[in-house]
Amino acid sequence: GIVVTESLSQAVALANDYAPEHLCLLVQNPWEHLSAIQNAGGVFLGERSFEVLG
Image (cartoon, rainbow, N blue to C red; front, top):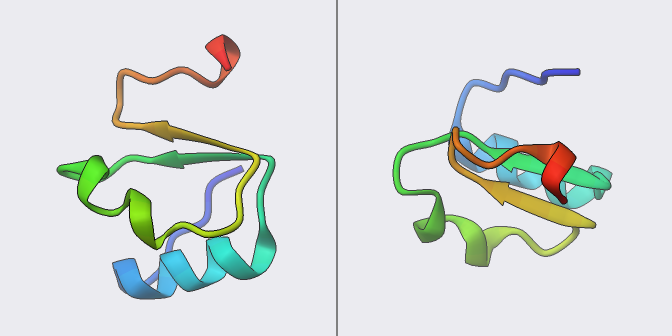
């Protein structure tokens, strides 16, 4: 599924609270935001990262 939030900081907080098995960061410069993610099984960065490869 897809979750849409009002801000990136709200999305990061939700991801850290929810701790998804697979988290796709589909934002500009995803590497800049990776350090904010504390709880996720696998993090896929950018639109060219495919969950099926993880």
